[in-house]
Image 1 (tube, rainbow over the protein chains, first blue to last red):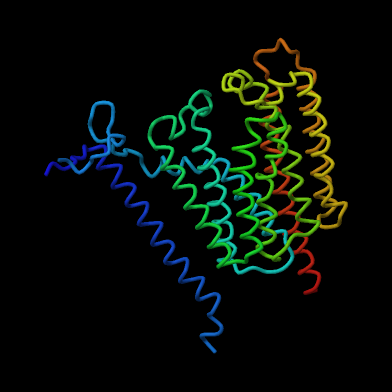
Image 2: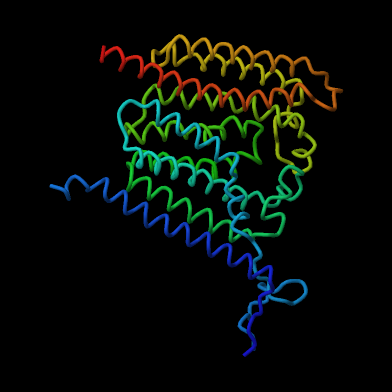
Length: 46
Length: 318
């Protein structure tokens, strides 16, 4: 089967987009974690 | 057989059309310069509102408002890609430049809209999330799809979308809308026409080429200049309302009055500008001043609020 070959520019831009997406997803994990601590923090301590 | 059978996914040369768009190109879809203004005015609403908000929740609120505004910018670029390609000011945007496909921008805008509204609702409160959703709808549908290409009053009504952020910031703290937040809304709402029509005057050729009915193209320069002065006066008056209504000090009122007089002064400069003036320097000066005006007026409101609070706290301690 013939597959798509990416050129260097396409590989570079894809790598950049993947890194940005990874950073956003990691940021969302941290965001939800901290919000949970803030919203339920007092209740969990008690 | 190849893994790509869809002919629409092939470029002119028959090779697969694979994206070379960078993360920066996607960021450009969010209109970062507009977003910075949104962040600033939303922060003002957040700071000025009575009550307390956890600093991290406040940060999330600003982030969601910024992303929501950016998402509406992406939806605007998706819908306006045809006219953006013709106008010099917008021809280098990611869609007309061929870096991002319109449907990619649409999906990006819709996804970010949903995420920003839902996260604001879950993390902060649902009235603020509702206001953000309405703002995105207003900018993308009411302004971009309907008003922009149909009436010379497009930016007067559409300006509401840009004026909502301080109101959303306020709602993030209080959970509602009040007279004070409506005044914050009106400052940007009444400022928008003079700001945009100054730009429309020296970009008349661009707007004329794409058939967007901006006021100078439809009603002429003379009418536009008079309208600019009227809105500059209204902006100057609403600018001092925080002092008159008692939620800002006399000091802020003095700064707002001086800025308002400056706004009127520059608008009169535009009124006196001859129609034969091709450089349109007075219009460019008014445009530049208007940006500075909004920045300083909201800065002054926040500084005034912080100084008064420090003063009151010092008084109560003493």
